[in-house]
Image (cartoon, rainbow, N blue to C red; front, side, top):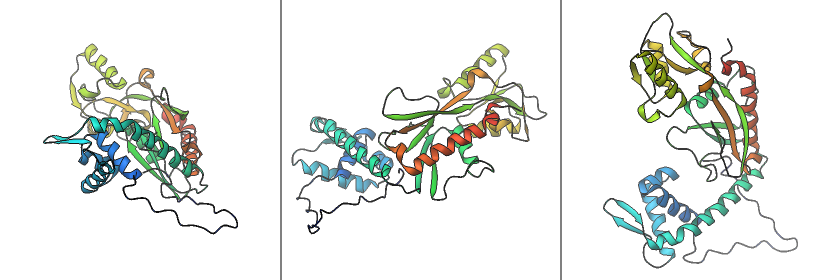
Length: 318
């Protein structure tokens, strides 16, 4: 999932002593992967959901969970109910210790990755749809220094759930707000301006806006005030920027778009200056251990250069 996960740890042999084979694990020895599965089932609430979170099949999850439970030689750690698994008292007692093991293993994995000078691998970036679209369209920009050829950028939308950087669900994130706590490197990338757009030559009085579940978004609140002041109707509520763009482009209604999207679209025209209160700041967030990974550093530098180079485009300066 994260950068350089496949690197091996190179051991050192003591001089003048023959290399020895590592001892075989004793029967019933605990496997870190089984601990990881146990915690995933605890957090996700079912073996199916845990499998999706870890990228494993449900039978594999079931087998590893059974192996973890067998390690303790006592009762099962989950009650098997018709509606699914429920952590019981015996399982609850193990969660703090399992999380301590997880913290230690994740620290070792991050530091192993940071020790490698290899400038290749997949760097997983967790961000929203708007920023992900911007990064995707700039991968082959004419002037921005390109990413090294050995790096694959993986963009993951945070529309549903925020990736946990400590557990390496992503190598880094690009978010509207920096975290209030945690061992992270944080750097402001820049700001996306937003304005109101419509199809060129059309005169729709109706609006395209967000869904009720997204009513707390700053653009949704701004549009709601316009609706209350003008009494104009809502033509469409949609949950993604792409849906908004397509509806506005078709002439369904007017709506808010990032200036980098609306200004460059040949079928759209801007109706307002950039709206300061709904400008979206973005921050680069990386765990401090992973900041030292060569390919992660390269992506950080690329994003910073990209935001600097495209500053006027993002600000809606036309």
